[in-house]
Length: 113
Image 1 (tube, rainbow, N blue to C red):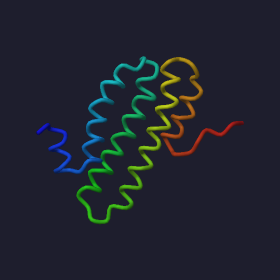
Image 2: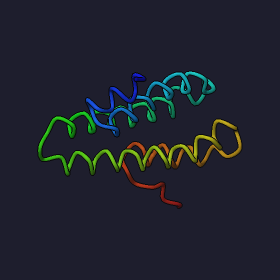
Image 3: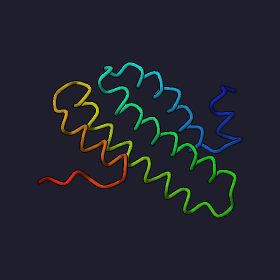
């Protein structure tokens, strides 16, 4: 039996999927341009680690609703960041990356002035 499927039986499929995502994410962030790696890359990595932490806590706790809600919010932030970083890293529209960075940092979208 392959290793990820075996681990999913022990820890749960969500936790195993997030772990596999992290194995892909870390080397991918290392490929970001230097100008984005230490700003967006660090934020994305921190958000992903927060999701992993919430899933670990939910796996080993009976009252897991709050932890799963936090993990879900973190996943939404990662999805939002993915859309902006693909543009920012591709150098198409850096302001999208700034808006996504603010959202990752505190959960509020950038307000236009």
